[in-house]
Structures are given as structure tokens and as C-alpha cells.
Length: 222
Image (tube, rainbow, N blue to C red; front, side):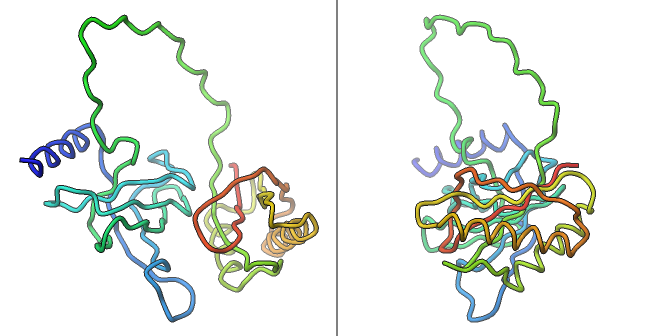
């Protein structure tokens, strides 16, 4: 009975949103590979409102429970890449369903005699579309861009074009000195210039993501 109820709960979720699918599982970097090195590519990106840092639920067809979560690390127009956060021994496979984590369960109906919610005005539409974003990592206490990081930059510039507005985001952190933060930002700016991007603004607002290395983001507005 419990499994039946869980299955019905997921069926309600699937009816409320169109799920994404895992279309590829890749490994990046140099061997030896670990489970954490796997990159899961999904068939949706900015066109589905996804952003770097979003947490998504992984569901396998025929299974009553979710097998874990995916954390988005790179977003493109119609695809994104994510790392897996396991909740058991199972790992995602090509073809598994992916749902937004906040819609894990359908809302529970409240009492019938509750006061109606006050009417609110819809939020004003944003005048600027959210940026395209890419995530890369620095080794601890190092400011040099790794060959893998440079390949990521080349791919993003190739996909997004050298025009538009660019920014490098090197977040402030307790363990990160101001001098090292500045050197990393300058290294990213220099790499972008070498690829044809004339100017990239530096952003240092605090921001975190999962991973054992220091993150930095590349952001691009059309």
C-alpha cells in the first residue's frame, strides 16, 4: 500500500510538469574516475528555466522512490549538465526522468473553511533575460586556469559568441584571500580576451556550490 501511495504521488507530479530526461552520462577530466566525476546531460536548459545551482529530483520509471538529486553545474539554451547527489546505492542512467525538487510531492489540501488569500499583483516582468552561466573550479590556493577550465571557456565562447555582456564571478570566501581572488579574476579575464571577448566585468558576491574545489562562474548576457 505504501509503495502504491508513493507511486500515485509521483504520478501527480508528472501530471503537473513535463519531466526532463537524462540524454547522456559522461566523464570529464583524467582517470582514475570516481562516481562524483560523472556529468549527466539533460534535454532542457534555459528554455526550461533552469539555472546553475538548481536541485532536481531523479526518478526511474517503475520505481516508487526517487534515487537521488542532480545539481545543475552548467546551463545552455536547450541542454544542461549536472552532478549527482546520491540518496542510496543507485545511480542515474540514460533515459531516467528528472523533476524539479520543489515539486517532489503534491500539495496537501487545507481545510475548507480557511480565509481566502489576499489578491496580489503579479510581479513585473524582468527587462533583461537571465544570463547564460558556466561553472568551473580552481585548485586550492592556485590562480592558474587548468587545461580543462580553458577548454570549458573555449566551448562557452564558441556557443555564446564574443558579443554581448560578459562577467567573471569569483565569490568571496573566508578561506580565499583578496589577492588570490583578484589573481583568479584577472586570469579568467585574460583567458576570455585571448578568445576574443573584449571586456568582462568582475563580480565578487558570495556564492557557493557543491564540490571540493573553489568555484568560479562565467556569465554572459545577449
